[in-house]
Length: 351
View 1 (cartoon, one colour):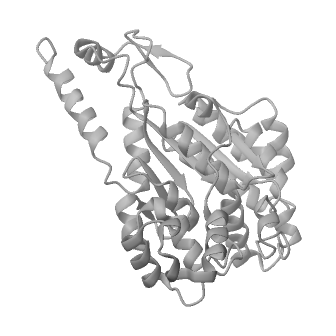
View 2 (tube, rainbow, N blue to C red; view 1 turned 90 degrees about the horizontal axis):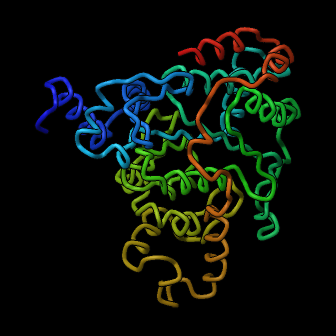
């Protein structure tokens, strides 16, 4: 590191420490991101791009990378945030129910989700995508008659599904409304695409849904659980379920998933499922005598539990960068009856 100033050497050490250490809660991740988001551009220019892409400033971070000859490859400060919009809509709808005594505001849950996403942006999140269920039913309903449907969803909640998608898009956030696939499939697909980009330091999947645990990869692709306020990396998945993330579909196939509507294999609980999977591997590798005639059902349930990762939602991670609200957001804010969210968007864009 000869030729670097003491300040530049210190910055390099800090960058390396942040790159190799991820033991933060979700607020810590956003804080670290806010510190390092002024990353060196991959075109080799000695400047840094601000988060919204509105200005370029020369700085010692870029000079440090240039001196090491790593400016074309290092851009590893990018943290991608993938959000389960359907879960967030349910969370805010029933959260408001505790206070509104059943008198639901037409867009109360929509505004709750917008404010959640906007708070993440204000805290430093730069690359954000939201997956939603445009309809509840998917291809899985054709595979298993008991799979979850939209039956039973309260009309006041269901009426906010599409307005949420429209409001997010107008706010300038990448949104993926799913029809044939589910929002979970979109999150899994987005995680695959983002993780394949060497410029991405970390992928955070914001949902407590146990299905998404199968997407976790060591401490680079993690699950963010707001309910328990925990970050679930591969070690945490193993601790919670007793199996590796890649075996989560097999695990769920054996124990069942009441939320998704399939029962699993009778007589096999969590402990037995983990023991069998750790001993034999995936269900396809089980000796025939273990499941017997139930093997076909187990494989069907595994297909239900396995998330699709082949949805081509975007081609470059930069397409997820939030650059501020679109021109349509003012009308959306007026429709939702909240002018504050418009002002907050404008302020966040100026940061």
